[in-house]
Structure formats: structure tokens, C-alpha cells
Image 1 (cartoon, one colour):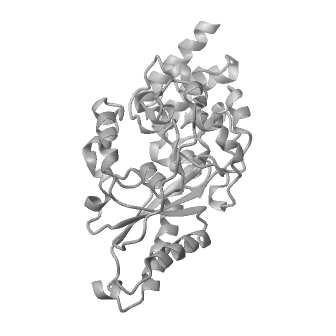
Image 2 (cartoon, one colour):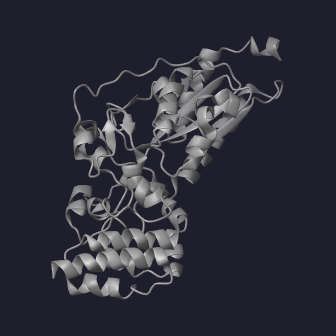
Image 3 (cartoon, helix red, strand yellow):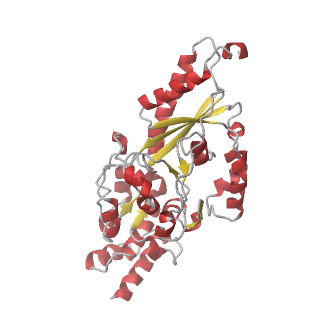
Length: 360
């Protein structure tokens, strides 16, 4: 096999892979070396500080995240792809500014990105295997999209797809940060691209705007304070001291991206699967809080939001309603769930009602 592989023009194949990726709807494709040894120190320090919160899987996999060749034995290259998801939705800032509305992170307004990207990456992997022909044993190829212990942003930066912003997300000069990442770990010895350079300079807009001050230092996020973590990953009670800061953000938070100057270059995604569903970009807190579990499951089928379940959905909305202006509609919605079957929901409803009782 080695002799047959020697006849392949790897530079030409890498160029073809990028072209095929574009044909599948990816905005950019790059190739990274799987050796991420230089990133292990920062990862271990972050874990030692407990910044992962209750995301035990982060610590459980430890340094495996920086070792793709251990995650997928035989890996010699990592193909990294990015896809713009920004929906043509109602103005995000206007939504945030209206405390009666429910703010949902832009990435979750359409269909579940895991399914969309995984399907496209599988198609790309199949195309690569097909182009190599039947005379060669099929290469080792495994597809991931936020579904394995990989340092995705690190890989993407090393593949030349952008640089890590101070908010820890990947940034590009031409499209900001509104995109998903996916990877193919492959045994093919593809030439790695040059890493991207940092263009954040002295800007700290993302750090200054964070409602909970979760970006504790440039390029360092304490998940325990991040609203995305609190509303999506955290399974129990949202800490009381942070609830007023959550505002009307009921699934994720985009403040750091909305504040980033590079995102002024972002354009809405043409991908139909990322289009807004069920009017989620303009829905009110009261409206969503009234959903039964059956309604929640029906409306959120095929959405990333489904994974948090109805109980945490109500928990988040109760906090949003506790931060909303006091009015009969809001108080009535909360009163209707004062005796909810879930202790978690009852706790947050009681907190919200106490806030409104105090304001009255």
C-alpha cells in the first residue's frame, strides 16, 4: 500500500478536497497536522481550575482532546470544515432589548447542526475514498462535529480557517464567528495548511459585554459563569446570584459575538436547514412558557434545543420571566406553574414570583 500511496499527488488531492467541500456547502476547508501537543498545557490548566463546571466529560477525556491520533488510531491529518449558520432572523439586538421576548442563540433557531454537518462530512469522506479508487485499501476516516473530544477551534486555527478570538470562538476576517466546525480524522498524509494569525489586537469588546463576566481573561472562558453553560449544560439550579444577569436569554447567549467588530462582515447563511423555525426569533417568554411537554417535543423535533428537555426549558424561561417587567400576563404565567411537577421548575418559578412581588 505504501508503494501505491507514493504515486498520489497529496497537494493536488488536498486542493480537490477543498473544492469538493465547497460543492457540499462548506464555506472553507483546511487541513491540520494532528499533533496538538502545544495546546495541552492550556487545556490542563483550564481543567485544573474547574472552569468546565459540571461538564465532566471534559475532564474525563483529558489530554485526549489534544491527541487526535489517539482518538482515531492511524490519523495522519485532520480535515477541518466550517459552515456559516447565521439565519436571516429578526434583529438579535432588538430581541435582547425587549425583556418580554425570549432570546435563543442564533445557532439553535434552525435544525440541529449535528445532523446537517455530519451528513455533509460523510459525503466528503465518501468522495475522498471514491477518488482514491478500488485498488487502494480504504483510508481510515472518521467524521466528527462537536461530537468527540477534539480541540476543534485549535484544529481549525491550525488549518488556517481563522484564529481563536478572545471569547475563545474561531474568528475570520471575512465572516466573523457565526459558523459551525466539523472534522474528518484521516489516515491520508495530506499537507497541512499554514495556521491563521490573530487579528483581535487590543480589542476587548467581547470581554466587556459579557453579562456575567465569564470571559475571565483573553482567550479564557469560565464556563461556570457562561450563560450558554447555565442554560444548556447545567442540569440543576442556576445560581441565584447569576439569574438576574441572565436576562431574557433562555437558550445560549450571543452577546460576545454580537459585540465583535468582525461580525459586521457576516452575511446570512443560504442553508435552508438553518432558517428560523416556528417563529423562535420573535417568540415571547409567556408564549413559550405555556408549551406543554408534548408541544415542546413537537416544535423542537430536529432542533438542538430538544436535548435540554422540557424541564430545563421551563427552568430557563422561569428565570427570563423573573427578569421581565411585572404585569398580569407575566405573573399569571408563573402562577400557573407554581405547583409544577418538577421541583427544579417550582424553585425557579418561586424565585421569579418573589421578584415580582418585591417590585409590586
